[in-house]
Image 1 (tube, helix red, strand yellow):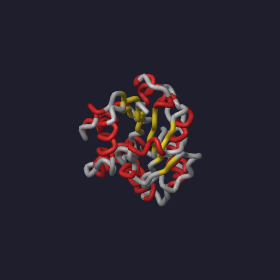
Image 2 (spheres, rainbow, N blue to C red):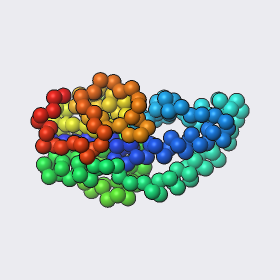
Image 3 (tube, one colour):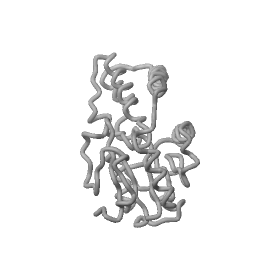
Image 4 (cartoon, helix red, strand yellow):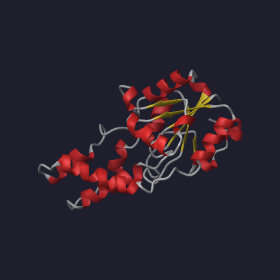
Length: 217
């Protein structure tokens, strides 16, 4: 095993749960609920599967100042993210991989500016040999393009790579790229229906690269 590819949102940093609650609060001001099952459609991908702004307008049945609403939601989100922290086990798993001379990459359906912003904030950017985002591909997850590009930049093959994902869309992308994937669901994705997977853990703290050869994928 030569390389590890990580998803970003919801795996290294819980950016997904705050977004869900920000939108849920906005929906409630219109007397509406935002079921997690609907929101989950865009977790790990983009708004093509479920567009929360357009859906809100459809449910309200009239035009909404979406530009103003987006600005308000982004402000509320930033307030929530002021207390953001890396998810448990992130530092430890990155250190483990580096100690074993494994290459590291991020493959994210988010934008480059978004991912780099938080990687820099937490001092993680220098640790990664490659960071590929939606700006680098035509199709994001669940398509495999992000993973294929990350492997190309690292110079590794699927059988030399392991992936970590928190969402069904991310798992589908890794599987489609031929990469063995371990899922680490978060608060938003924990109850979602995942396609067949090899191993599920509740936290990155549970994973030990020393046991990698013993895992049956």
